[in-house]
Length: 185
Image (cartoon, rainbow, N blue to C red; front, side, top):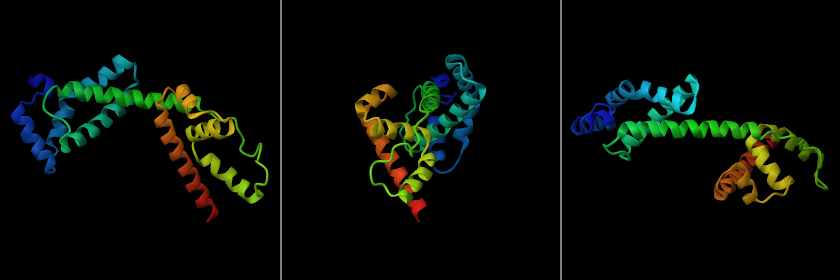
């Protein structure tokens, strides 16, 4: 059981966990020394990750893992497996987000078709705000408002849950409004 838990017995794990909550970082070091390199190699082998990407995912997993330890959301058990699994999920999430960003290029110029009576100064501000929004939000908002696609259809294309896409749309709209307001000040 110790081999599955960074070489720690249950009692040693409990002591280091208590110390971690009090600010002692020895548990971080124990995890890092016992498993970081194995996790890194696993990601490179399993997902064909570059060294850099595997390193980033492993470090992100270390931070998230220790945060969960402090919040008592992780119990003694197969900690090595859990840590590696977290790193794999973080890596996949990042690569999926990166590939989505590459797919979400926008060919739409916001000045192409202004609707009706939009004042020129408002359109100018909008044209300044749009590029600051980010490609992912641009693509989502363009698909929804300009192409008049339903959220369900967009979610299917992005291979995401409709509720997730709805929330993302809300965040994108809020961000666009925030950028717009900043430019208007």
